[in-house]
Length: 192
Image (cartoon, rainbow, N blue to C red; front, side, top):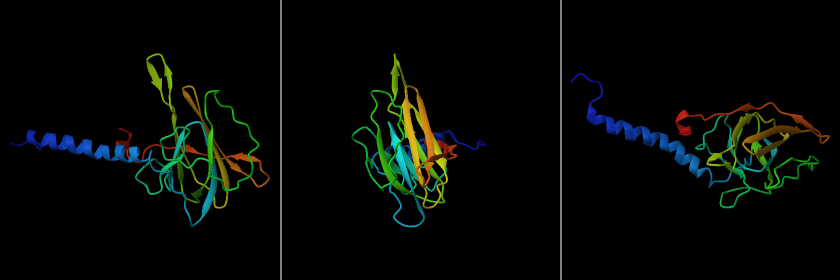
């Protein structure tokens, strides 16, 4: 037999590939039951997360990898998930108004995030049903927070779409848009 793969080895390879891709899925599932772990030391920034949907975070990464230490849920309007809803770091009072759907619940929290290292936010909407179809809004962004700075991330699900806004809160209580880029999975196999 000159074939590189013997037919009896194919089931082993198939099972191995499924098992390896399953590692990412298991980490993804665990990330729903694990709260984000804010840093307690080192250079930090503050962020106020405001959302109508679940927002999870991956610290010190510019891509999504739920295996990373500290990753997990920041806020979520539904019960039954880990969350850090309603935390306060005495950030400046927000005078902005948010436009949200009438049936949506708005949640927020103020948390520390590591500074001078990439930080990724992932929004997962609860979905929108239309006839036999169901749509889920997902959006991931990454940015580089500065030390001792304050930010606000507003992630709103509106019908089939996601609205994501990231701003720095300046010392005079005004807001400045912060450049963020879309974030994907660190490992392509995690998206299966």
